[in-house]
Length: 295
Image (cartoon, rainbow, N blue to C red; front, side, top):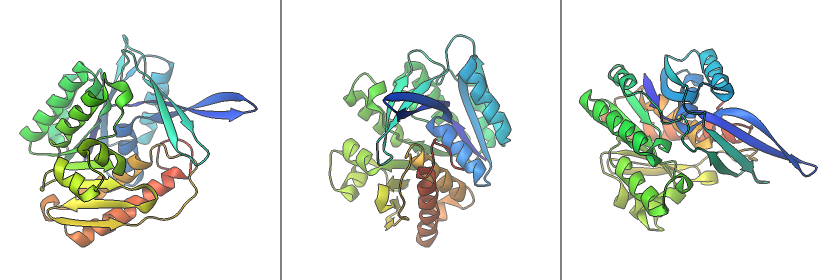
């Protein structure tokens, strides 16, 4: 089982018509999107997270119940509201976010829930919690238990400087947890930002470790992997994007689902090429619909 831990929230996706913007609600949150994607692809996925005991929280909880995940532990918090992310899409489908996340529920995860880590193979850690002291405490316990039980740790940088106190803090925290993971996903822009280098290969060498499986999304150019000295760029299909929200999550769900089925330390180059080819298709499919979940 792949156990995803972190934010689950409501994406409020805007639609402008005749000068008026209306918003539709969709389930969201990067680690939850990954979990739902793994489940959709036939993999075994579990999720640990927190929502408010409110209208949006019950919407999310009801949605998750219908997925029939391998495992779920979603805390209904009476003291904090469900986190909201307002999403705007440009004409080419690219999205921008504005978070309603002042003292909200997404990082109010119970420490005792994390013992479930012992029953999983891969632990996928969400990054949004890292902007809060309590969230960092949760993340550190996830890392500790993952190492204690000899599991694989997955981390998606999913960089969001607007929820941190400063850009410098966001970069430093991202680098700290990136280096703790066995499997890492970044975008090409995140590599450049975190490394300070324009050259992708040199940037990856600077910020990652040789024994990590590193996946880099390249937008319309596909994706690239780095693992034990092996590397290759894998092209993707050409599409007309409707909404890029969740494309990276759909890509990563496919990656983790495939990796969970293999002997991690002995993955071959041709296997990685095939894995990224499938993952690219999943990411492209996610761009062809509204909302962040793979359907």
